[in-house]
Length: 253
View 1 (cartoon, one colour):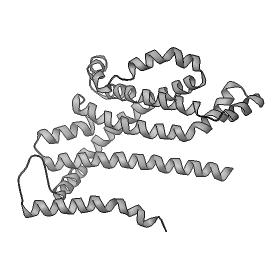
View 2 (cartoon, rainbow, N blue to C red):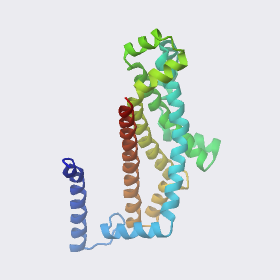
View 3 (cartoon, one colour):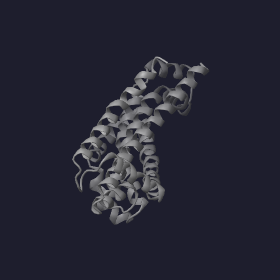
C-alpha cells in the first residue's frame, strides 16, 4: 500500500498537460495542420480502432519488430556469449565489429530494398542489423562480468563446456541480458517505424506518414501517441516478466 501513491504520481503531469492543451484550444479555436485538441485526437484514435486500420498497422509493425528481434538479438546473443567466453575470438572479431557497428541501420534501407523489395523481409533485415550489435556488446560484457569464483567452481565440478555455459554462465549473466533485451526492443520499435516512414508501405510508420500527407493532425498525433504507449507497454511487460522470473528463482532457492 505504501507504493500506491507513487504509482500514480507519474500520471499527474501528462493529465495536466492534456487538460491545459484542451482548454487553450477551446479558448482560442484554430484550424491547424499541425496540432489538434486532445478530444479530437481521442476521437480519431477511436475511429481508427473501430475500422481496424490502427489494429492492422500495429500488427504489421509488431510482426516485423518481433522477426527482427528474433534474428538480430538472437544472433547477437549467441555471438556475444561466444566472444565473452573466448577473448582470442573477441580480439579477432573486434575490427569487423567496430567497422560495422557505427553504420546507421537506416542507411542500409536502400541496399535492403534492392535485395528484398518491399515488405516484411526488408523491415526485418534492417531491424535485425540494428539490434545485433547492441545485443552482441551487452551479452559479451554480461558474460565477462560473471564472478570468477563461479567459473572456478564449475571447473572444480568438472562440468563440460556446454554445461558450464548453461548452468553457470547464463544464469549469472541473465539480469544483464534482460536489460539488453529491453534496450533492443526499444531500438527495434524505433527502427521499424522509421523504416515504414522511409520506404516500407505498411505498419504504424506508413499510417503516420499517410495521416500527415492527408492533413489530418488529429489522426497523426493519435498514431504518434499510440506508438509511445505501445513502447511503454512492451517495456513494462518485460519488466513484469523479469521481476516474476527472478522472484520465482528466489522462491526456489
